[in-house]
Image (cartoon, rainbow over all chains, first blue to last red; front, top):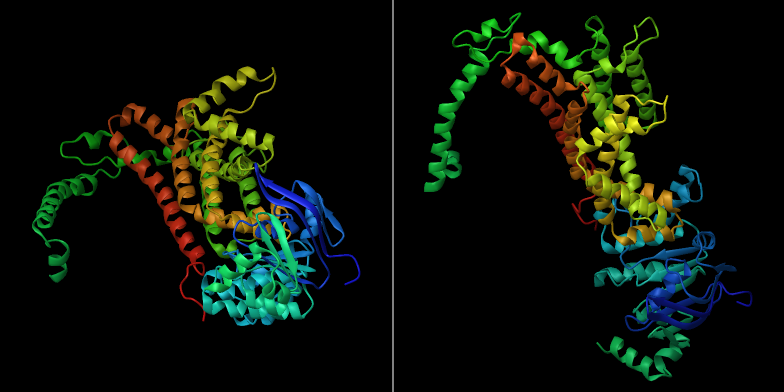
Length: 247
Length: 351
């Protein structure tokens, strides 16, 4: 992890109108590092991950992804999106396409990959998320857990260097959370650089290299999971942990 | 018996309504059948037999003058040309309706088919005498106006709808201006402008054919209406769809064509077809600028002293022709909806 970081943010500020959602955010993510972002709702954690692939513009500071400085223009955003995969809370699969077509769309239309090759890659990825037998079903015919696994495979089909997860299990029924987390744990084991917004503290404990705690648009704490869970330094983190682990 | 009791006589008001409808049918249907079929005059060289006492519907008007109604003032001995043209259009409609023909070759078939129709209608080549388009008319003209109108207005409306949602100020402004200005005036006034005002503003020596001017006015009009229908569809697509496409790195046009429009247009089918049907019938408004469409040829037929007074028959026939086309559109759209729905509905949740 000695070489340059995969994601680097320096003094990043972002406003929605007059409301400042991110305040002077500094964070650096090394290659292969797994970061879990947590914090109360409205703390800016989702906004922070959406900033990494240009889904949200920012107004102050500097964001660099794999050496490319994001400048809120089409060119750098496009370059960065080629490196970064994203998984959403609400899956966002394309409902008019089958699982397989969801996976082949971007490789064929962005990377100009031949269709046969894209399909082979897609099947291999669906196999990897253990859903190959559902390849020809439409999203509406799949359960939430299955849809989210297809969504992960869809992001992987673009062979990203970084994977962003924005509350990937929050919209799932409890019995389906594990099947999605298992896939994410495997992915982590393969050395993917990951930034995960989640409240799954079990996942954070086992997978994260670092837990980053945000509140009111600021990074309040950043520590190894063991340290963070056992000895949080701030009251805000302690309060958050008591709320989330208390029930 | 049981069905009768459950559905027609289940309660007192229900039974009364059933009886009332039966009585009306008994009073109205027999005379209608007598008029339309039993006592109808099916063929006659002129309207004299229709004036006889007890004569029913004068269908002879249609059988005698159907060629004029269908082809207008097109030279009589050349009527096979628009007839063949209509046939070509019908073949194009049917093949376009079948999903198994939805491939790039279909676009070629349309280009070829329309070129063939152009050659047939204008002539001037292959030994076909030239026929200027002032003489085109009847059903052929109605179909041409509707086909070209929709073929150009629909893609244009998609661009307008996208433009209205665009972040680019100029594109947005032009789209809003177009839609709001055009929707704010009646089609008739647009047609008048196209037929009367446009020639005044054109530089000397330049003239655009009246048919083309009318067609452009109709396209401009239909595009504005369709644009709002398409925009409705676009607005129903969840924000996350566009974001997911963005995150995969799909540039704007590929995102729009591959992800957003297929979904937006699918849910817009019912209102789109509604607008298409309205547009098909609106083509009859060209009567006011002197174009000779199906309805105009009916009107002219009725001005013929030999056939005066049989407007009911003539307009019933025109309605039937319009109905056949509109009903076909409506049924087809329902089928298409059902077909596209397959696999999208949450029929079963995979284990």
